Length: 203
Figure (tube, rainbow, N blue to C red):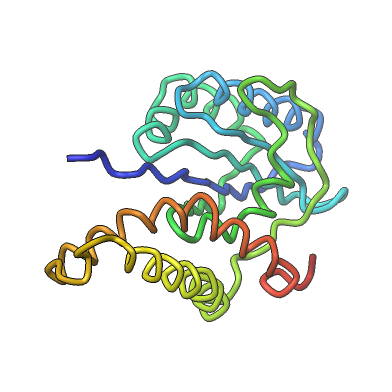
């Protein structure tokens, strides 16, 4: 049996930082991204401030899947790093996003990702963090990608000799096995790029 497809997981953490200790916090946040970069499954991380005078800071990191994410989150290295910042940093909110919703975070992840396994740290990027689009927009986007893809696949499969006589469950199984990677790696990213002004109108 084929192994299930791993979905990258993006974690967004909101923290309140003591404004009098901004210089320490800056080094501390960068140290956290540096530590995460050494773990298996790491796909990128970064941090932003809500504004120059704000005490609200955001940190983001992305891992290949839940097991590799938990490897970082449960590590003694991360525990030490968190302890070292407790005097000036207070965590107020944590969000995880994975699966289909991850595609709708593409602008969010791309703008803040400042460090990868082979890339040097560049410091914070002053970019707002957009919320995920409303569910109805996500549904419309998925449908706009799925309908033509499914229509094309159904037409092409009609040329497979004897395919129409296959049991229904076998036909659906084959079509979904073929379409899932196409949707995940090609169609959804393309459709969300095209619809980005509608999905995130404030960008």
